[in-house]
Image 1 (cartoon, helix red, strand yellow):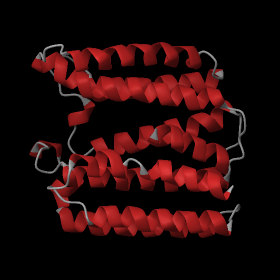
Image 2 (image 1 turned 60 degrees about the horizontal axis):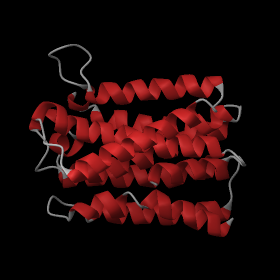
Image 3 (image 1 turned 135 degrees about the vertical axis):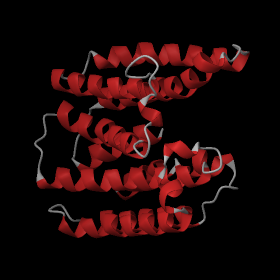
Length: 252
């Protein structure tokens, strides 16, 4: 839903209408991608037994894969190529490049950049390409903001997962500590909202919404810690893009 919401945000910001194909492709593709990344890492090396809930997830993923393929072939050729590239990145995130080598997910210090890049590419670049829009100054401004937002949201996850992550992953909190991570995240979100003043499409209502988004994200970041509930990040933090989209729809 978060990925779907960000695609909808892109369509609103760039005045894209009636592009339901990209939204549905991203929605179903995200289900397939995330389930593959999460449950392949559990089932393949650890030989987890196929319980009824796991079978249900596999069945849901299979249906989503069919839907993803269906909408994939309705995309523009250029969009298909770029979408395929991000699919390969997702695969390499879980499957090692070479036999007996670690996958991209376990590359020291790089995980957060891969995740942010993929989310920006899928939720922003694909809708732009599929509608043949030019790469304007505004596009690069939104790209910068989108990358910063995803990056900071992932920082919150890394803080909460600090006691579970292997030290060799070298996540941002592991490298610079929780306090400095929060300070860096706050500075990034301040930059996120200040960048709006350089927009050629500046609107006061959009700015107010992004200011509220910035404050909300900063609060979630500052109050994050290793002892937070699993739903703190997996539900509330991931719902931030959804609420942003819903509020933007309301103001629109």
